[in-house]
Amino acid sequence: MSILGLFITSAILILVGMEGMICIVLAFPISLFLTLLGAAFGYVIQDLVWDIYKKQNLTILTIFILPLILGVESTLELKPALIKVQSSIIINASKEIVWKEVIASELPPPNELIFKTGIAYHIKAEIDGRGVGVIRYRVFSTGKLVAPIEVWDEPEFLQFSVTHSPPPMKELSIYPKVNPPHLDGFLKSQKGRFR
Image (cartoon, rainbow, N blue to C red; front, side, top):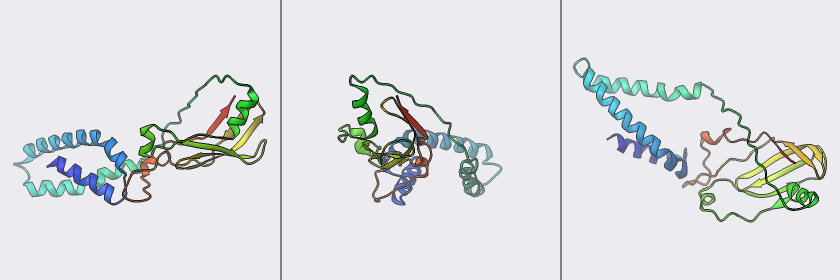
């Protein structure tokens, strides 16, 4: 019965546009484990208190306690940790050629199946002018990343801050636009640089 409840809840989340298919599929193994754990825990509690409370009282108690438990996470205001990501690649070309590609470039769409699921991919980079203060745009499949240039040392070093990041993915859904809250603020660029 608890697994049926999990399927119904998943279907409702998709139908009301709170979640997309990819997130439901990714969360399903964890949700299934927690559902079975909760069902087992509930069964044990029911057996322990069966003589003390009638079945109706336990059900009513559960109905009132569940919304309180579900709301706890949103009140904690947990901030994700900032994680530095650093990568390097050696390019067999002159600095001048590499510089042109760094400030403005265009890439063909990826062929990998993972990007067909809605995960954002880089399309091109554009820039409005030259030097400190100009805006560099990285166009992704989900929108534009806006990056004002902070350091411009052509062709050696480029550093920028990020004032706007596009969503990390576009959910697969029956609705044209689904914006699940778990995608907001958890994958966000703040700064970048090229040497």
